[in-house]
Image (cartoon, rainbow, N blue to C red):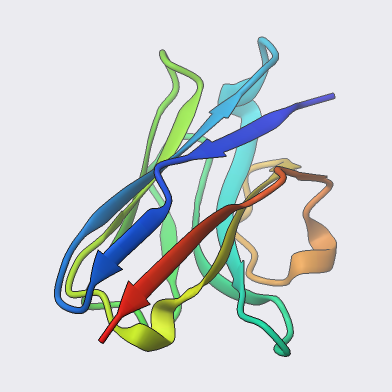
Length: 124
């Protein structure tokens, strides 16, 4: 069992940056593939980025590929999402997710554990 707690969301102007953090409980964090998803009002949850247990493999959605970077620190049981050049369309609740195993996947239903989410609002 893994518990995930996101932090770092907030209100930022377009063009600004935020770094989201997701702290995980449990001693087996390093064996989990981690990901970030987001959900805007009235829209379905969408994949943002994922990272393998070692950090050696990542996947990023095309819509954010040049602006967002996912990383992890297994010593701190934490995964990060660095978001630069933010746009109003990035406004959403951002969720951290975890799944056992090392294969990077991008579909939400394959992730077993979820955080409560952190709100990111980008003003124009």
